[in-house]
Image (tube, rainbow, N blue to C red; front, side, top):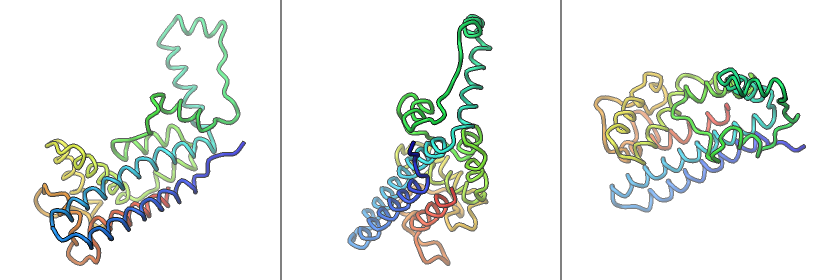
Length: 231
């Protein structure tokens, strides 16, 4: 049975990211108002963050589809836990039941079992992503996330909080964004926040930090490109 190619998922994300980058570069050169340039930077970051969310969901499904041994064990553990907590169900199952999985879980199987609502598989921070990878994926694939550098993991958290604040504009999302961008692990990346908290996300994204040749937004695109290829 044909399986999903994780490499194709990675290639597709890299292509999407490249298209967003090109759109931003073409657009920024054609805009004269600073406010419009800031808005374009925000919209482009939002598009990249949405693409990243889709990439994470797709790569998880692809890895489970290619080797579902660990995911099946997770399902067995969840099923056993449910039976332990419900005496009647456990009694009925012990007398009449039998839990069996097909040798190969299809894409549809994985999607329905991983998220029965039909939504993407999403994580609010990298620590949750890494933990779920350990529970759902065979070690070979889980290690790809675990072995990312601390700065790469911090970049993912930064992108998530930037996306959340652009989408919601709440004080809570603003504080979370500023906190994630102050992470020491971001120091070498070029996107670590310096000094006081800031509010104008677009202006911050389109600005070039001292000593850097590209804007923070372009830096984020390049960082996400490298992170996806390491996954």
